[in-house]
Image (cartoon, rainbow, N blue to C red):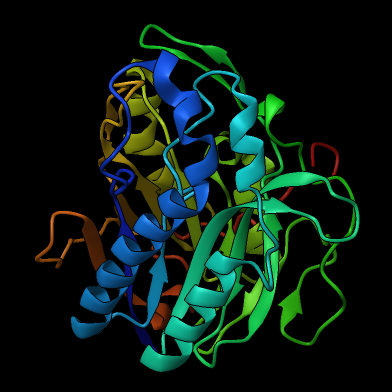
Length: 309
């Protein structure tokens, strides 16, 4: 497939019964399944809409089955973590991918079945409903900016060891940076904070990625400024397409505003959004354009200085 129509969501949590005060959050401790189900329902409708517009690849937002809970420490959210293959989110998305014949990247809050460790994980599901593997967020932020604080290290840790079994459909020597051979493209994932580390896009491109999806939940002045340029620079530098998905709006009771601005970029710059839905961005990725010499005359792979690299 030379031209892949790709979609990403840019939405906030769809659970409509969140309290207005942070102090009232404990009342939801027994309703985590309802929160997940509301978001699964919402995203199923978005996926169906994107597929109806011809999307072959659909990426969901970071931690899509829930509100972004890492703005403060609250132990109740730990119980939301689920299995990356047999949990309710993966099961629902696998069924949907099979029914619609689309590739879905579903970033969830994972609890490892073998160790009990928790991760921020993107599950990669092929168009036949098979789970090709997962990418666990490699860099975990904890800090604050002029708008608010975030403490992800309380909820999950970074990927530290191999966890994707050898497969002809997973490329790359570094199992922490898998590239998946999907039915539509060779696909890599970089979750939110990962995008700031230059070896991420470089490593995925070296492993053969044609497309990199970067689901995120981000806010703040510097983040918004960098969001507008980082993907274009990495796409041009490494000869790949990159899609960034950010939430758009705010979620009670934290009321932190997320600036959205989700978009796709390629070696030639930002791509046109052809979506007709405010919670979706859609672009056509011409994979054939990634082959052949760079129009700039650059050959960064050939001309690397081994004394520096």
